[in-house]
Image 1 (cartoon, helix red, strand yellow):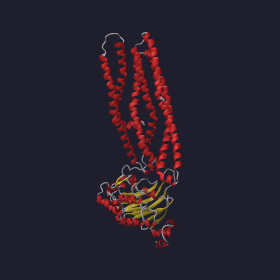
Image 2 (cartoon, one colour; image 1 turned 135 degrees about the horizontal axis):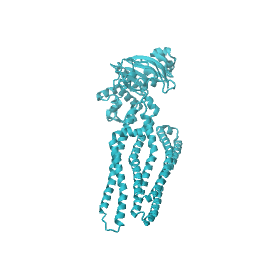
Image 3 (cartoon, helix red, strand yellow; image 1 turned 120 degrees about the vertical axis):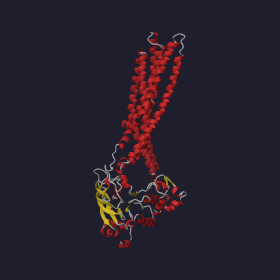
Image 4 (tube, one colour; image 1 turned 90 degrees about the vertical axis):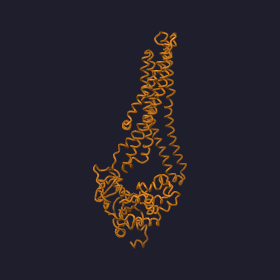
Length: 578
């Protein structure tokens, strides 16, 4: 927590110094008013002399105005500082996450990253406001109030010390209890959020199996636990005002009681008593502000730890210290004894994979679910780095290349076609930022997407919802393919990108792609034999191992695994035809 505040407040150190100065001046104004009030009472009202104290009243009026102006101006500076802090922290957090590899993102989890980016940074922002408003002013008010009270009348000082001691004991007890309860409350709040997210995501399944009542029961149970923790927390927090008021009231009684005796014995004045009552109120108010900050502190510490944890992650995929340049177009892609596993000591997802393809050739990858097809594909753009072996482009290890340089040569169509909010043209320009409408139209033609785009009222300027939920699965896949085509990359990666297309559209699209990608390397992961049978090289994977390699006809003759897949999809005549 402290590390984050120091790091992101350093550029604003002048404003922080100004906030501290204004806090000191505001506290000084608050402490001066009781002292001037004592002077008016003792030297003017009770002296019996015709003394004009209009000057003192004028000074008090000026101080009263300043005691309003200083906090108001300070509040603006605090808000600007806190908002700037959270903006810079969010930017740094987002930039760092963008630089993490897929392995790093998998380790933390998408849902957790969203929570840290949103809620935890908000907690840090709130904590900074509390720190600059209460945690800074409160100690000054308490210490300054006690010091001035002691100077005003040492004989009444023991009452203030007694009240402060009582407040400290109560605050320490409540803060200690609140910390424990808050941790439990946060865990239960996370459970509620997780259940809501799970239920909303699986709403169709819940309705399909008539599980509404059971989900309501689950939510009622978790919500009840959250309510119990919230009530327990509220009892302690809401106990502050009555207990503090009791301490102040009891201390006022003691001040009046003993003050009256001291006045009788001429050991204190009426002004001393009145000043003491005001100082006591300021001290207790300062302690209440301090306690509010201490209650918030555990939440801020937890949030800061979660954010720091992500910022301290060293990306597992990094550029070389002296990266090489990839000259000319990509002419070859090669795997040499590549093995990969997701975690240290875990089972291998890929084992000893070797192959080579050249520009103008198509590589197809087929196999059962969990055989490692998508994993192999993810090693090419360095979403992950191979655990063993080498991936080569133009004979050069891709780990020697800059990630940006490598990925600029690759067009990826992911297994789950994802579209961003914005227009269709905006989504296509994710592949090429300066693409013209003519280029977009050509890409749509190749992807067989122009017809449904032109049927939209605004064509290329039709707005899509986040994730492209206002399109069908096949339409999203074709736009994702068009997004890769518009880039005109040297390597095309299609991760089961034709599964939502009907056979007719699939065949037309593949025919158009053959002409479009004639000078590029095409890598296709597919489940349909019909999609890959024309490939120049087909890899057959099973449990992460390469169990077959060759053309369609060669594999039909040599690979039992490939024949089993083919038998489930092709007719006897097609099998015999090869």
